[in-house]
Amino acid sequence: MHSQLLRVSDVSAGTEDKPILHDVSLAVGAGETHVLMGPNGAGKSTLGRVVMGDPTYQVTSGSIFFDDADVTNEAADKRSLAGIFLSYQAPVEVPGVPLYSYLRTITQKRPELKMTARKFRARVGEIADQLDMGSSFLTRELNVGFSGGEKKKIEMLQLLLLRPKLAILDETDSGLDVDALSVVSKGIEAYRQDCDGSLLIITHNTRILERLTVDRTHVMVQGRMVAEGPGSLIDDIDAHGFEQFERAGEDGGAA
Ligand SMILES: Nc1ncnc2c1ncn2[C@@H]1O[C@H](COP(=O)(O)OP(=O)(O)OP(=O)(O)O)[C@@H](O)[C@H]1O
Ligand SMILES: [Mg+2]
Image (cartoon, rainbow, N blue to C red):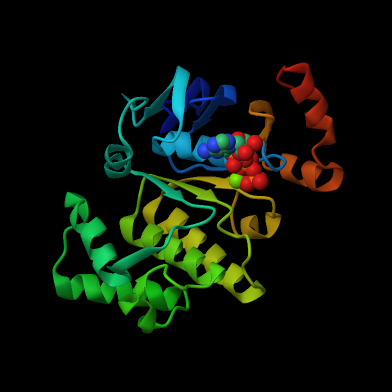
């Protein structure tokens, strides 16, 4: 059997008093690009956070394997070191921590990314240029007072610096102007090609996918996976919406 990088098997999860995900399964192979779509409130961000190990959510049944290791009960920092990256739909502001120091700290935690301060500075500068970001960003506090689009670029900067094995991008494209969208989609393409990383892209907008070859599309409705298909399923959704899947969700079955 082809070994998968990420294997989510029959996962049910939620907060203490609210079940959100029901028997969700999804597998992403090494170097593959997958897209997760679904109406607002379907549970897409929750799935991303559950895979990342966000303690807000408890897994009540099922398992999550990453790189052949069972990470279902691992803490988020362990999963991060193992190579899972989650770009948040709404990145948090961290007052008092300059962006540059933050980047240096998270990089130094990874033995495979150890580099001298000089090399690090050069690498960060290179990526900031690639993302069309001014260097003044780097001395500012992490995400504090940054515009929505700037925060998304900082998430991309972290992605390109950390070179994770799997990047889950949760609406990294939302709120970006047309030029920023192009910069960010080039960044995602660079990650795919230079790092040979796997992608799970959560999006409502297909423009971000134009530079990528999508291997698999997953559709979630009301906390359940209701359809899975090739990249062309996205065009079908664009043309016909989620109504066809919503009926399947109400039946409680997978299409
Ligand atoms: N921490 C939480 N506490 C209570 N309810 C939550 C929590 N996190 C998520 N939910 C609920 O779970 C459901 C799924 O939310 P989620 O954010 O995963 O949806 P989504 O598919 O990402 O939607 P969108 O496309 O709008 O981003 C929603 O009804 C949401 O209110
Ligand atoms: Mg969401």
